[in-house]
Length: 200
Image 1 (tube, rainbow, N blue to C red):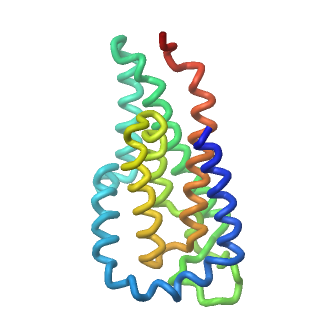
Image 2 (cartoon, rainbow, N blue to C red):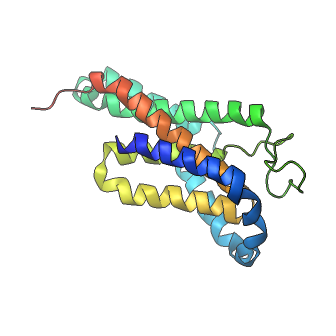
Image 3 (cartoon, one colour):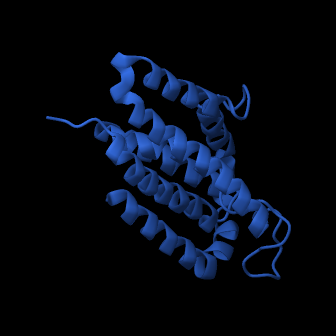
């Protein structure tokens, strides 16, 4: 249930950011730009963790292969719902994020120069693709393995901060991506719960 509340909270923050925060942040982060190598190195490391530099869909291929193996091998079958949760959330998050990006056409902070307050024109900034990619693995893992919650939230928080501080996204871009992933995690989790093996 906490995932549903996270989705609601992030959606509310996104709405507030669109109206009151987004345009104020880029001018205020100039002092942090000297840390760009740190943010970029962290993002690059995480990209390798999901095999993004190998092929943009390599991570999805691994997740689907793991899900099929869990279904095919009897002694692994009780792990199939977990594989299904991570794979379904990750793949759906990536596709839906791309559709929203194309539909909203939001400019990045570096492309936006005033005018339209919300920055919707011919860009691909909303929601953040990087946040969607990493949160859609980290959040389902946080649900499945409670002891991983803190490190998974650290990963999500780092990516959100890094993308804003690097001036690649507005605040609402990153919170909107997390709202999307949290909502999908909750919905897919509800759908998969009947498939989970019963515990004594």
